[in-house]
Image (cartoon, rainbow, N blue to C red; front, side, top):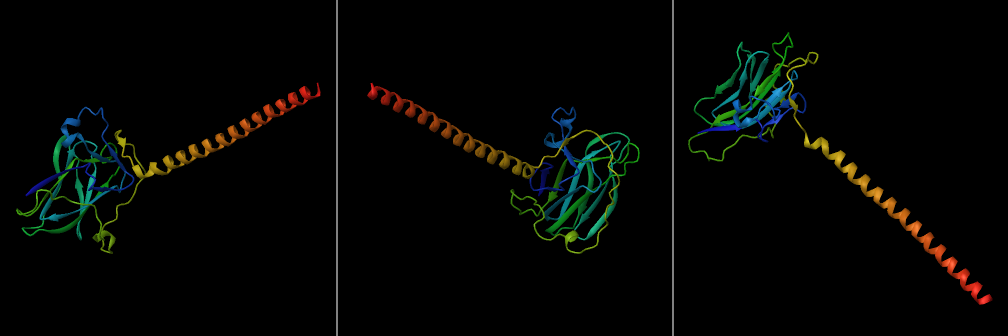
Length: 228
C-alpha cells in the first residue's frame, strides 16, 4: 500500500535552522500538496524520518535557483541530486528508492547542498513524501521521527556537507519553533505576578497609613471635645 505524508506532518524532523515555510499570500500555493511546503535556505539543513516499508520517494518542485540534495538511507549515501531545471515544475520526484519486496525499518536523511553560485543552487523545497508498505499493513501506517540511533549518529561514515557563507534566496516565512517561545512566555507570566504582588503591598501600606491617619484625627477630636 502507498501512503502520502505532507511536509508539515509532525512525524518529519527538520533541523532547527535553515528551513522556511510558505507565505500565506504565495500565488502558487495551489500547486503544492495541501498548499504547504518547506524550503531549505541554508547549506546543510536536514530532514530526517524513519519508516517501515519497501520504498520511499521525496517530492518537491524543480526550477531555476534550485539547489542539490544529499540523501542517506540506512548506510547508503547518494550525492549531487540536482533539483535545478530551466523551467519551474511542481510535484516532481526529487529522489526515490526501492529496497525490494521485503518491508523493513529504514532511516532516511535529506541534506540541502546550497552552492550560492549566481541564482542557481540557492534553495530547494520539499512538498510531500510517499512510502510503500506491505499489502496487509494497517491503513493507519505512518512514518516517524528518528528515535533510535540512525546510521549517521552511530559512527557510520557519511559525506559531510560544508557550510559556505550564507546567501540570500527567495523570501519565505521562517519556520517557527514553539519551544523557543516557552521561556519568554513564562518570564512574562512571572513578571506580571511579581508586579501584582508589589502593587498589592504598596496599596496595603497606603491604606494602612490612611486608616491610621483617620484614626489619629478622630482621637484628636475626641480629646478636644472632652477638654471642652
